[in-house]
Amino acid sequence: MPKRRISLTQYLVEQQREHGHLTPPLRLLIEVVARACKRIAISVNKGELGDVLGSTDQSNVQGEIVKKLDLIANEVLIEANVWGGHLAAMASEEMDSIHVVPDRYPQGEYLLLFDPLDGSSNIDVNVSIGTIFSVLRKVGHTRGVSEEDFLQPGRQQAAAGYCVYGPQTTLVLTVGNGVAMFTLDREQGSWVLTQEDIRIPEETKEFAINMSNLRHWAPPMRRYIDECLAGKEGPRGKDFNMRWVASMVADVHRILSRGGIFMYPWDQREPDKPGKLRLLYEANPMAFLVEQAGGMATNGQRRILDLQPTKLHERVSVILGSSQEVRRVTEYHAA
Ligand code: AHG
Image (cartoon, rainbow, N blue to C red; front, side, top):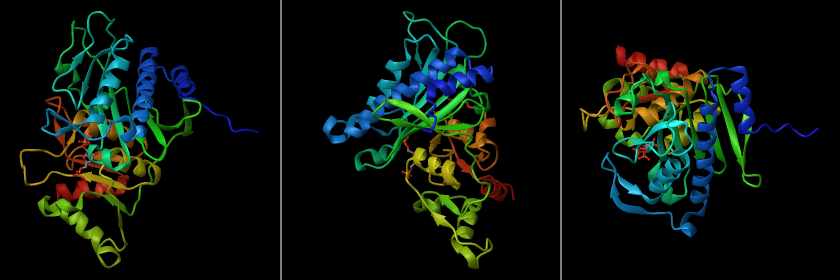
């Protein structure tokens, strides 16, 4: 008997039937984002042949140089989503302010946030990169839409996911009912369900952090890593392994696949900057996925999904993954 293949559409229809919170416009939104990711995957794969590598002469609102693929992915996502009637507005790492759906199109009830191309430093060196997205409902019934509408705690996300462009192109999704993984079948051009109800093991011996910043971290962070490095002879009594892809999508994908802890903590070089990663379109969607898979996500003090954002491009410290380790790091911060 050939294995039954479930497409993304079929999965979403089943979620819609069995779980009332997946509305038809949300289903359309997710399908449109998934279709946009297919287009981005084609550009990523073309690489030099598609003239998509290298930088533009622009920098974004965070002062980072914008790569050609950052812009391409941003445009693909906007173009795909702007006309369907499911969205009120979009926000992106690559846009200073929100992109409101123009009057010529119907306005929907959802807000879409994305990091169009995560892991920019890996684009030109052929290492896994990805797209991260988060979906919020527009709350309140005021006409129009403003930046304030996006400033909702992550626990209010209606859906979140990412697509990783690696050896396989994989879409990982939650609509608040567990985490599912879809692999792109290039011949068919369709997303096929390849794993359902993903669970992150509670325990792990694998950590991911940019170790070159060790001397700049706060004492609780250093304590945790020092203890991991001490291995069997240290207080943890076991050896740890380290992995750091420098693409959050790839590091989180590994953690969803086999466990681990990912950290991008505050550091003292810029004390007023809470962290490197962005709360609304990087930390929140990843925290939602990780919690839905049984893991934990905090900023060292609090659950990420409970943080009240104060601005669109807000940054945050991130500690996420296997619950036993995330709890330990968070307890060290409280001590
Ligand atoms: P960007 O959104 O600019 O591509 O940022 C990438 C992020 C994240 O994906 C990754 O975990 C981290 O930055 C890598 O940072 P380092 O360069 O410090 O390793």
